[in-house]
Amino acid sequence: MAQWAAGLRAADSTLALVPTMGFFHEGHLALMRRGRELADKVVVSLFVNPIQFGPGEDLDRYPRDFERDRRLAESVGVSALFSPEPVAMYPPGFQTSVAVSGLGAGLCGASRPGHFNGVTTVVAKLFNIVRPDWAIFGEKDFQQLAVIRRMVLDLDWPVKIVGHPIVREADGLAMSSRNVYLRPDEREAALGLRRAILKARELLAAGWTDAAALGAELERFLLSLHGAQIDYVRLVDALTLQEQTKIDGRTRLMLAVRIGGRVRLIDNGALTSSSTEAAWLPS
Ligand code: PAF
Image (tube, rainbow, N blue to C red):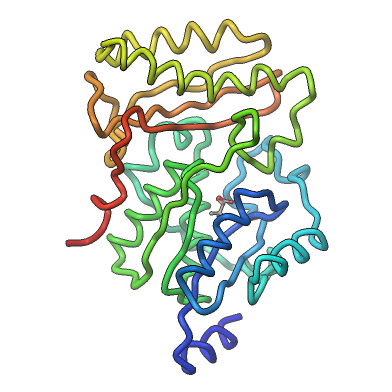
């Protein structure tokens, strides 16, 4: 992979990397299409990264279908699908970890200890192997995107990080490879995440600006859904991910809910239309 990418760079081609764990859906394909708009060649990595899963999480049952993924990637013009074996990424003796301490600590980092160190370590390796000009990540994993932007700024990586808006099913459910775990009767509860975001926007439009009151109202709504357990409901500053007391133009609603005790879903949304993307660009 490294040699192939170096050959392209030597021939003055630009490269976009889309890091994935496979089992592609429209959300992944949208990231790949964005890569094609930005760069001459798109590399997609497909690697179910063992070190970002905690004990008892779904590493062993994570959905996989390499042939289908290969066809889909090809159909949107991806030049290379990089799918290393775990032992190639983590050979015996591997002992290094990349950690973004602040942004990775709360939210999913608190519920899934070690998760973001696993993500940043593998993404750091992928950046070094491919050395892309752009790397594209979905905003569904909003905290992951913030952690990766921070890592790239802090470690002076010459790669531009591009966030892509969440791609949703027709009924509003954010696309995720993990949606296959949902039983038909659990769909209604799963849709509650999107509804909570819309409800938050309605309440804001009706004059609610106190984050604690708004958060409590959203928790009440989510708990009313059959089979839903709340992991977190937080109103945070989209850049720092710190909890806010008053809603403002930078507020992001962050949600993690467990459905039927088994399926952990995340979703998020801005409460106003302003974007924080530009604020991440180095001045
Ligand atoms: O978002 C994902 O699928 C993964 O966390 C990533 C970025 C591919 C790292 O394994």
